[in-house]
Amino acid sequence: MEYQLAIIGGGPAGYSAAEIAGNSGLKVVLFEKSSLGGVCLNEGCIPTKTLLYSAKVYDGAKNAGKYAVKADNVSFDVSKIVSRKQKVVRKLVLGIKNKMNVAGVKVVAGEAFIQDKNTVVCDGETYKCDKMLICTGSETFVPYIDGIGETEYWTHRDALDCKELPESIAIIGGGVIGMELASYFCSLGVKVTVIEMMSEILGGMDAELSSMLRGEYAKKGIDFLLNTKVEKLVQRDSRVELCCSSKDGEICLVVDKILLSVGRKPVLRGFGLENLNIEYTMNNKVKVDSNMMTSVEGVYACGDITGFSMLAHTAVREGEVAVHHITGKNDCMRYNAIPGVVYTNPEIAGVGETEESLFEKGIEYKLTKLPMAFAGRFVAENEGVNGVCKVITDINGVVLGVHMLGNPASELIVIAGIMIEDGKKLEDIKKYVFPHPTVGEIFREM
Image 1 (cartoon, one colour):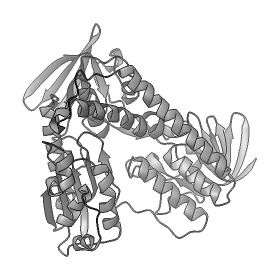
Image 2: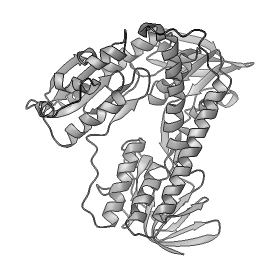
Image 3: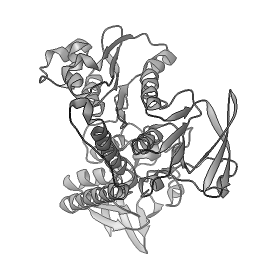
Image 4: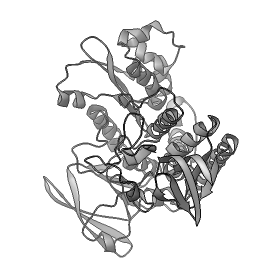
């Protein structure tokens, strides 16, 4: 069997690239050992947001009195919340399968193994290809902690399928996944403790807004242990004891469950990647050029294995760039305007440079900062909730970064990303007419 393009991995990078390539007239085969959609759709982005929306609706019902609405005896059914999550995932997976059919992509369910840059073997069948795209994604990183081998713990996958809530949970890692799951469990009444080795949660996001978000969740009852390292885990019957160290000394706590959320690592083994003899970066990621091609001619890599940005939307764009290069279209990958969103309640989002990154680079900048309350609709829909919008420009007014705390930051941050990608000045946004009232009008107030 001969194909013009073989894609290994059916996550966001893989299935998006397959659809574009198929619709461009290429004969494409896509290998996926589990379920189409990858981690993002099956056990990441979509399941998490589905659970978080249920929690957000529950929060809204409990606080309906703020908006002169009476809602008594509000409750939830966690098993039905999880069942709805599974229904959403199934629906979207079927949608991807349909896209592959429409694009004429051959989908092979099984573990692919690379023999050379033009040969892939799967379940005893040999597939020849002119070009190859590797999108094998990432997996949960499990750090070494004394006693972890004898301790029951959750990864994000276990947490997403939880139908019986624990009374208490310790989340090791205050990054995006950790904070989103902290938000979910806190909303449903679980006592949550977040343990983070760094001095602030959400490393890489704007530090000031991250601190503000932490303050909001501290009010909701989450305990944060910053600058704290988990040294040892001890199973105490059905509970777990965590022994931690911090600058203030040793801290010990006992909880019903622990959730490991300290990051992910690229999947680089088990599928014959070593047979290509490709180059790696200094931090052991697959090295690619601006067209997403590896050091081996005709072999491309996209998504988490490149290490630029472990985000689904980055992977989709990378896959698009790779296919464009294969089909002769002029395109290249840029990373200066990749949005990042944390779907807590309130949401926090950012794109481009932060104050911290510019300070490290020694670049002079200007900062404009306004409360989200400058937008009338935000005030109307967020009783008693604070929010902030920060716009960072260079000395000439060109937008370098935008960071927002407040709903719906996830929907608004794309406006900022376009401004950065197109090299716009802050004053340029005021030439556009925004519908009124919208929260997005905050950009016109800057």
